[in-house]
Length: 215
Length: 347
Image (cartoon, each protein chain N blue to C red):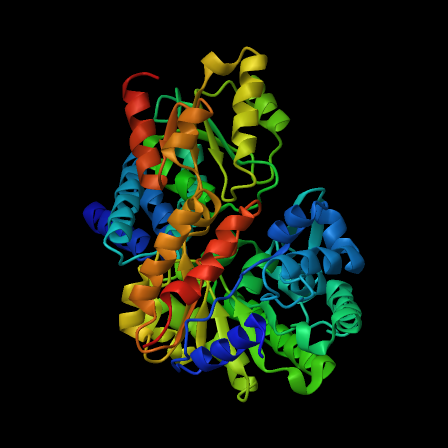
């Protein structure tokens, strides 16, 4: 019975059936399946969605829909996740699209793909001035700062954020990863970022490595 | 004796119909980032004073062999402001457009606007009339607008709309219905304002490239096609600089006759092979790697390569993939224009 529920749940995640996924999360909890176990199934489903994207069976809308679905499902599980479960000593990450830019697809995809890593992600949204990034770093003390830009005209804002981190003596407290269509590895090096994420998958790989190396 | 501008216009007219003119024509995709920088005016002034916009475009037109007609450069701002989106003006950068449908129930706020009198649609019309008086009707275009899919993304927010397509398809369709009717009405108004010189209908949709074939068929194709079907006797231009490689064969199904200034990293030879017998291709010199950052020699080499790949059998216009970026060196644009006649003679 428990195996059936888990299999159905996996299937509903992969098929991006939001309503069925939420119902099955509730059913699973009612049947005594631990929240941690349900989360593992959700994350396996997300991994499969990622593989389908890499095989060009799924595309951007499917990835974004997966993000929404995961967010809703996690809301059901949150009260049941004990304090020592993944999330207790979670690595914090602040992420946002820089000032003058309201593109959020790339940023939201990165957030979705980072879910399996168990990060605590603070999403500042779009059109975020450098000062707001700095304020967030001071308040939340993240280990990772993610900057997204989709326009060549807004890319310089990334440099401004990094320069301001230096001025405020915060540069050494946080690893900075940058990404977005016009951003290049050369640009990332030039502005002093710690890493360049070509897409959500490579960003996840880089951040995963950082977490394993204990940042 | 005909001017280069007249010759080029005739060549464009032949290429649009998949013909083979005497020489490959060239098209300059220039918009507000380029014009404002070129004329050394702030973007916010360019958008909010028809005189500044006109003079900036005239300066570029005179410099580049008069190839670029003037046009009311309010695409995106016109359509979104008329539907109620808030515009945040930046002093020297593109305006930011904020969505109005934040929650699904907000869709009740959305209705087809009065396209003569609403917001920047009204300003577009006034600017067209100012330009027409200044330079003559034959030197002003007014046929290009945002497409229905991109307009839906902007009124809802890009991420939210993509989530709607999968998680709330009825909502996505409801929004697309209104944006499609809006673009049709806006095109009818411009057709009336311009009169018999209204020869083309152009739509810009950058976001459908993110959809796979199945979702493109369901959420992009029918709506874009409907706009073109409403104006059957015009030449249909579609612009998308997203990666539409996976849905190329669907482009002619939308009654697109000219596919212009597309994904900068596209392999134009593949596009030519797959749809070049049905659709005129306009492109595809890389706007950043070549036009902005290259030397004139590099521009010329790349133009030669694009011509060799896409010009055979006609139906081709040399241009950039996407628009000419702000700050592109003048000599690079001149190199592109000259390359058309240097390497594009049809034997």
